[in-house]
Length: 250
Image (cartoon, rainbow, N blue to C red; front, side, top):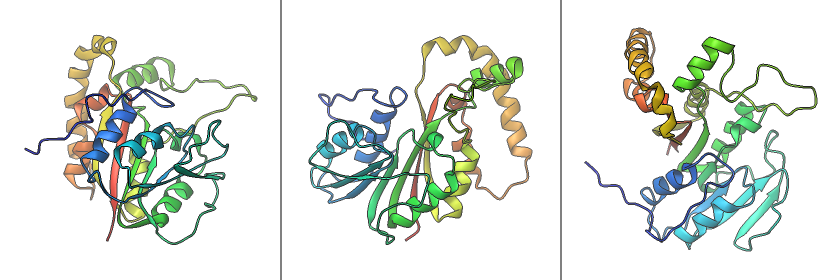
């Protein structure tokens, strides 16, 4: 069994503009994936207030950092090259693959065209480069109960006013399909953002999970069993966020 490196004990990571523990989990993945002195070219989409990239800068001091978003951050970071652009459209970046790492932390639910976004990300990755995409999990045990009772997922209201902004429902199977069809092999899917209060539904989860597992085994599919197991572990019934880590074909 491989021993995973942890972040430094004094390395404080706040929740920021995502679910709890997401930033810390992604950063832990990165320190186990790249040496600290790696001269990485990193792109974060959308970069928000540059909080995540500031953590990357501390962990990888030789990295060259870039970020893009539809609005500029309130406080600029001299270590980050910022590009203002609409990520639902073709990227205003050079077309050639030039990045070792592209991250999208809680971003895909804000875009109306997930296909275009993944295609643009994959095109900018170097061969062998890493793509990390995180998203809210709408397949928790709470979501299953909410859909059964109210016809809605936990994160989505059944009715929206015309003036309200509606985030996109991007299911995990769709993200996995888009990554694989654009040359990005999925190496890891991790669930995070757990809450103790959800353990009240543990008895129901213990009842449902074996049925779900049996159903998945019976499905005719060409997907590797190892990938399916990562997509639908027991902890996926409780983790409110998931993190996909993939590598572009060399």
